[in-house]
Image (cartoon, rainbow, N blue to C red; front, side, top):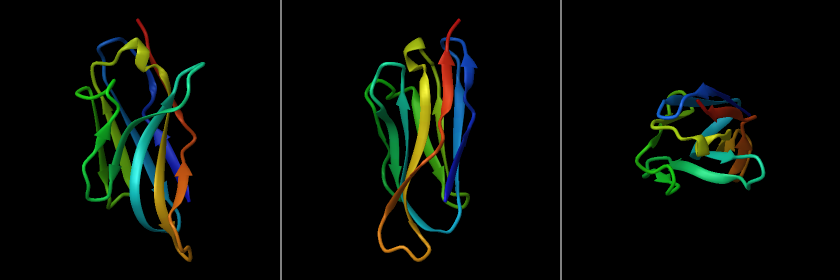
Length: 120
C-alpha cells in the first residue's frame, strides 16, 4: 500500500492550496483518512480527519478555512486550504486506516509528506 501526496508549495498569506493524497495497492476498504502537519520544532498535529460515511473533524486553528473531502472511487483524500496564514507553514502528511487484502485488522499507513510554506 502506498499513499502519495501532491499539491504543496509556496503561497502568499491569504492564498489557497489544495492537497491531494491517493492510496493505492491491495486495499479492501478505507475506514478513515486524515491530514496531519508538523512545523519545525513542534509536534505533529491532526489538521482534519474524515471517516468513511461520517462527518469531518478539524483542528480549531483551521476550522472555517480548511475543508477535507474524499473520493472513495479513487481512494483519494483532499485538503482545500483557504485564507492561509504563515503559521500554517509545515510539512503536511496524510494517513489512512485501512484493510488490506489478506489482512484481519485495520492498519495505518502514512504518506511521505509535502511542504506547505506560507510567506510573502
